[in-house]
Amino acid sequence: MADRLIHILPEQVASQIAAGEVVERPASAIKELVENSLDAGARSISVEVKGGGAELIVVTDDGCGMGREDAIISLRRHATSKIRDAADLTAIRTLGFRGEALASIASVSHLNLRTRRSSDPHGVELAATAGDIGASRVSAMAPGTRIEVRKLFFNTPARLKFLKSVVAEQRAIIETIQRLALANYRVAFTLVADGRELIELPRAGSLLERLRQLSGEKLAAQMLPFTLERTGMKAYGLAAQSQLSFPTPRMVFTFVNHRSVRDRMLVKSIAQAYQTLLPRGRHPAAVLFVELRPEEVDVNVHPMKVEVRFRNPGAIFELAHRAIRDRLAGQFPDAAATVPMTSATEGSGGHRPLRLVPDFPAVPPSPVQPGLGLGYGDARRDGPGAGGGPSPPPAPGPSAVPAYSELKVLGQLFAGYIVLEGPDGLILIDQHAAHERVTFERLRAQLSDGGVQVQALLTPTLVELSPARAALVQAALTELRAVGFDLEAFGPTTILVKGTPAVFGADGGLRLLSDMIDSIGEAGLRHGGAIAFEDWLKQLACHGSVRVGRTLNHTEMRALLSDLDRTDFKTNCPHGRPVHIHFGRSQIERMFRR
Ligand code: ADP
Ligand code: MG
Image (cartoon, rainbow, N blue to C red; front, side, top):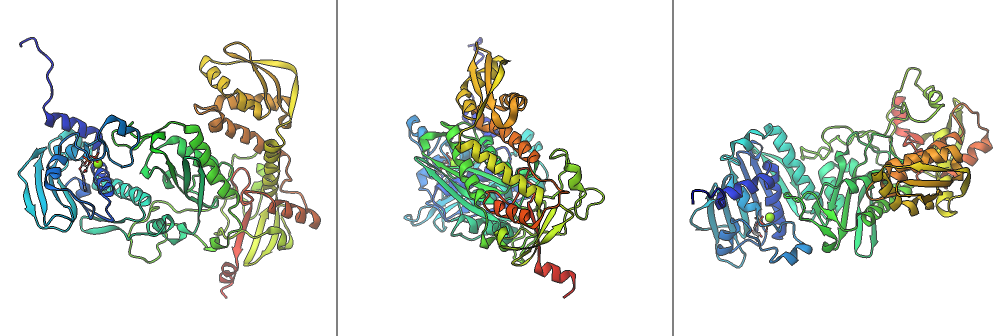
């Protein structure tokens, strides 16, 4: 006996350790409790917290409830009604399945559980302290479940010390509930914190309506619904028009089978769909749902279930990217988009005190982006109203984009801007940005449908690769050939380049190849390589386009406008700068105090 060092930990200690993984902070406890309510089919879920959730959390639902026996066992570790055996792990249709949330929370708090099935005459009440479950009692209550968690982490002081300020914990709770509410728009949610109602969301009829409830009419009016289906998978959601952008990716939400997940690949699929529409460093607003057969995704890779693993990430990337990209290509004209917008933070006078975008105003991208573009960047800066450095235009509001070629051309301004009379005001078109987009899309179309014209190199060139890169490049050879590189593997870590896409010229082609090789990611060329390719196309489009400073005659202006109308993504140049700025009639009249 004396030489035995190893022993099995008591259940309670094991639970506390497990709790460390599942329940990181009050918001994660709330996530687990609300997910249980959703799994129980609740139509209405209310959350109450005190002291940022550290003092008190109460989650009440009108779901299916539990019978007495189930209630008692539900607080034990590995207790779940959602799976029976390991085989069930391959096809999970519920949010929970690990059977450890309630046990974990109970082991680090004072927990009170009251629950009633609608078929039972009364409910049952249970209390547990640090995982010690007391005797059950009869409880008079409406059908559903109410779980009260007091003094979270009272017996794990180390964890308690790591909690942030009440405000920060509350903020995390709000974000958690917002994500759950986006994924479950048919369910009503409320959040009351220290007696103040912070979230109040009646059941909604659509995702858009839920978004409107969360972030207001102005943002919602800028969102474009998209959906795309392939066998066994579907991508759908809402993507903001490209005039709208944010300094952080906080308005990007990704869900897989109705579970909010952090997934870099999905976020990238969105970012790449906006690739030439937003200036570098700006982020869109987007809500992306991916639905696929449960067998296609492993949700059991993270204790808090906020990450997933896909069986076929490439196909999902492609689908999500396509879905959003196609929607953005045809984003105009869209008569519904005429709501003028100044700032997404502006309340509409409603009583909801919190918005999805409380921190920063959503502004259209500034027309001047220092450091982008080549050569004539300086010329651009001499544009309207500038004189000294970048200054944003006077509150241009994104509005429905008309067919430019049908509008009356009033003339050209500063040899750089075409002036149009729009249906509701004055429109200025940046001729360089416009032409750049036209050229860029033309090149892109040529490359994608005519196949890419390959130009043979006079002397084939050997490119030496690191072993890690070599493997990725070998795997992407077919894709590289498809975009116009004539390549051959030449030994394990060397490739032989015999030709490059003709549009870029020999030198440009080789430099592009090395950029593309640098940026090939795990999932092949699509992730990084395609961006490098587009960057080069952008440069090419840039060089081949009319600059600011060139006087255009009427015919040239008309031709440019008709070309622009036939072009996808015509609202922004390939670097994301706006092509047009609109001065609304009412705005003009206001300035004249009419
Ligand atoms: P899991 O959700 O992974 O099954 P939990 O520890 O979160 O594990 O919950 C254990 C079980 O308790 C669930 O499987 C479910 O049967 C039951 N349960 C928990 N919360 C509720 C609720 N709000 N309404 C009805 N049943 C619940
Ligand atoms: Mg659960």
